Length: 249
Image 1 (cartoon, helix red, strand yellow):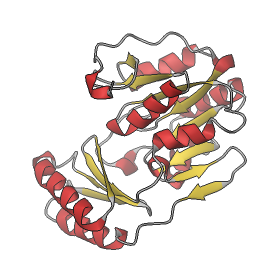
Image 2: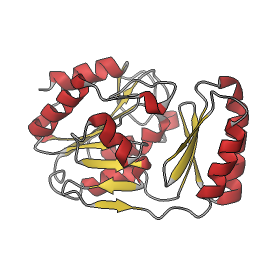
Image 3: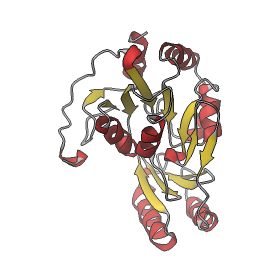
């Protein structure tokens, strides 16, 4: 059964039992509210304290799996999480600090140029260059959504880059590991190995993560409005997700 066939009427998850859990968390839309400009997400004392406490309670079995760059994740989370998969899995930092990254696709420079050229038509269009991908955000220019999608599809077809649709964003990324692949890799290594995995995320980009943890006997938790998903549980929003995590401590 594919996630498109699953019901969107999902129950709330039960309280986390941290002693048996390996916890994988998305960032935007899960730990932090979605904002118009990605650079406007800042560190937050409540979130930082929560992650510190979770990491201790989980004995290090905590990872953040995000589309942001590694540097941006560390900036927002104030370096409190060591195990990170960034750029949707193209960059991974293990608990011992080892960083593994894919080689950038040679077409990225030209694709970035074409996206910047397109973005010049509306100040609400934002191009985010991540080294291994380029993202075209149109949350602040919703009238350009159709044209942005058309451009991204054309660039993907021309370049061989992988097109990843997101929430008001089209991202062209170097082919390679996704969020689910990152979860699977973490689960083969200490301290994650042998624990029951839980993946919490909000976006279509998190579906590979939901599928990976459920294949390993764990659960996926969708944050936000109901939609077709591989997750088996749902939390209404970021505030409720933070409260659910805090309740486990």
